[in-house]
Image (cartoon, rainbow, N blue to C red):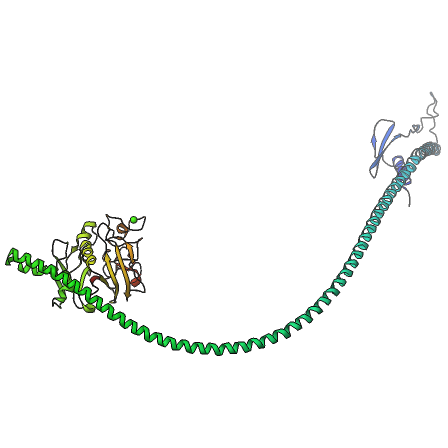
Length: 497
Ligand SMILES: [Ca+2]
């Protein structure tokens, strides 16, 4: 394979031959110089060549002619040609010499540069190889160092683990020994336990037998106790009858005294007021019933400490009769949205809807022990009642405080009225246990607590409008908190009827 400079030289020679023989390709600078460029890789070479100088051939027939010779003979054609060939040979010789010179020059100038470049390349490569070698050597030593470190660590770990294994095996041996000892102890305990169990069993059977004896004894005693308590109850009953008889006698004596006083007054006033006095004799419906009346209806009563006689409705049939109605709702004909004074004095019609009045009820219930019966009817035709064994109303100074006890009846599993210590409230007298004003929110006058589970004096709502009414006629344990009832009655009678 030819080397780079040799190829360059070949190209150059080819170029010279081309410029000499064929048409010049380069750029003409002057009359006597030619510039030629060659691109070799990244390098370009520029050559400036002298233009070949050719002697002008003598014109054919002009040479060797002497002046005055006329007409001289032209030279022969063969001489002119040979002359021309000689001239060309001379030119060729010149060019060859010049080329040889050029070749020498190139050889002298290019060779050291080439060898220098080769040496330089070789040096560079050697330096790179040496650097790589030293790097590799460094890395190898580092790795070897790391390896020795790791090896040392592994050896340390192994020795530590061996020591631990040894310790573990020692402790395992100890544990095995302890387990063996414990097993022996456990066995001993089990044998003792079984012995104890048998003893306990025998004791238990003995105790069971004793227990059975005791139970028999207890049953005998209970039987005896039952008989004795029966006898006691009988005694109590007779005692209560005796005491009630005595209180009834006292009461009748008092009433008789009052009647005598009134009769004395009547006699003193004359016969005109005799009929009126007869009406004033009855304090409540129970007395009217005792006097012989047996039909429910409107009657007139005169309560002690109450100046005017009052018309009331008496129920003389329900559950033994003798009931004085203190409240009745049945059709919404009377407005129950009233003030304190109205509820104190009473309002409405005794034959229809009405409220007897807190003052009168207070006077009645403070003279004798009364019971209360509340009767309720819903829009589906169900009728229930709530009965309280004892009912008493405080004075106006006590805000007509309610006292109830002994609830029974069918209007719910428990009372919808708070039994003790609830004051009466109206829209203009807030005596409830709420920060709010229950009477204003729920309407009517009632023993609101805060604000309680009932209000039989609420707004009256007709059928289909009675649901979801918080200010209606409510009794929680009968129909829930927002069902407005169809009809209600509240009535009282003395306990010792
Ligand atoms: Ca309040």
